[in-house]
Length: 142
Image 1 (cartoon, rainbow, N blue to C red):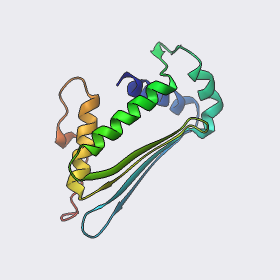
Image 2 (cartoon, rainbow, N blue to C red):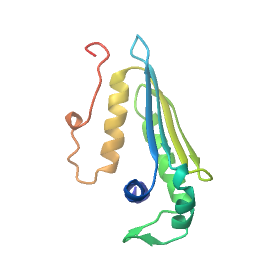
Image 3 (cartoon, rainbow, N blue to C red):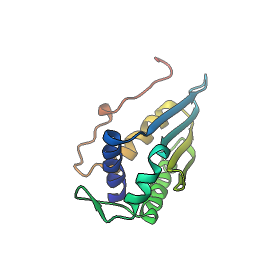
Image 4 (spheres, rainbow, N blue to C red):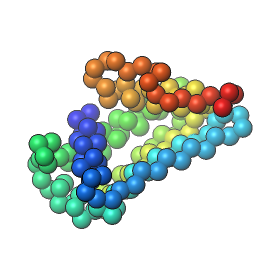
């Protein structure tokens, strides 16, 4: 869980000083099922990232090791797959190019909404996560 926060903090650092791209692709079929793909592409900063990955801390934040990041993303996949209606959740960690991809299929938009809520709640230690705090989509009402 700390690795996820460290990745988030590092992303913010690079947002200010370097280029990276986050792409979210959601394909929704007429019946409400579909596929989600989230790509975090930091390849334009890979030289800096390789240097940072060798460090212990950056701006007071601990830098996670590759094994920690892999373990954290594996936990996210397991948690996503545990949500009823979510299948084929997968993460690809490309540490050579620093491109990270999360993908899954969902039975309906309610399952997708639930997965987002479950993942957010697993990262929020304050126990104040509410479903209405997150964007949701209903295929019926659009």
